[in-house]
Amino acid sequence: MTPSMLRKWFDNAPKFAGIPKADFQMRVRTKAATDKEESTRNIRAARDQLGHTTVGMTEKYIRMRKGMKVMPTK
Image (cartoon, rainbow, N blue to C red; front, side, top):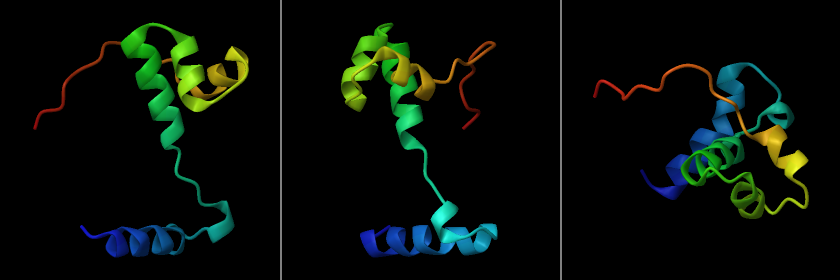
């Protein structure tokens, strides 16, 4: 996939979802913060990665996953 193909996909996504472009957001920071906290067991590492000044703000980004984690089938 080329950069222009990816850009076109993001530009068209709100239209296909039926929402205004201004309301469309990709939430990859949440995943990054969650992964960092899970891998290091240190919320301060996630805070530093996101550039937050408080752990409280980082806690809003981190998803506390419940249940057992499983590997994908493929």
